[in-house]
Image (cartoon, rainbow, N blue to C red; front, side):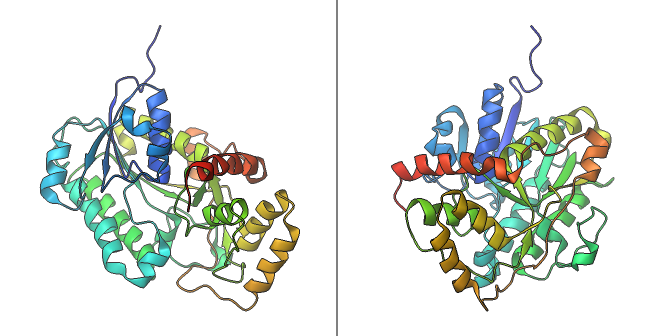
Length: 336
């Protein structure tokens, strides 16, 4: 019987205890890959620990921005690296950008600089964001991979800088096998940053708390389900491993079906017949403008489809029950 591509592959995931990192580790463990991860500290409020995935991985605890620590970890000669570690909360970045810039910018060049000349590494996936594009008018959306950055707000600037750093290390000068991904809002089981929209909705509905909106709900966003993103990470990293000509490529991924924030809230509340609660949220939203947020953000997947035939499998409406099921199990064991 032929072994699958991932069998025994030596893989490092930075930020393995994060939302995407935990889900990616879960999938790769099911494919019998050898998974290593970098975490800043033990974060028991993580899918990685909640589903006891940590017991099946080799974890390194430390600061990715520390040159000596990172250098020591990378001597393990990994074949594939997913660089997902980042400070991901826009609000945190807006209150004080320093730590976000340290994590997202210094963290990126520290790990990549330590990989120069590494002959074992065949595939590095650098996780960026749609926010690295900055603010474009609605008439020019969806974002195209060829767009230059117009980032202004701290989080967006951190991702744009990391993108440029990745492109530099992927250039003819260093030739590191890097693909940069820019995805729209990712949601689904395991997302435990409760400042993010959908986890905040889950907490409010399941625990009967009042949802406090941060804006008037008019911001337009694109939402991609986590299982689609995990499949896409595997697709990109495998193809880069097998074809180094993909070095330096950038790929956007969205569903190109933008939806207003207030509509997202509505879908979840009305799916649980919480009509009166939703009406209250609409009242709270009136004349409430969000600060430090890009009003319109969404992407298509044309380039991905052209290169690999990829397209998202999951419709937003079909994932609502899965999301509720996971968070209900989580809240049964964890008090927020």
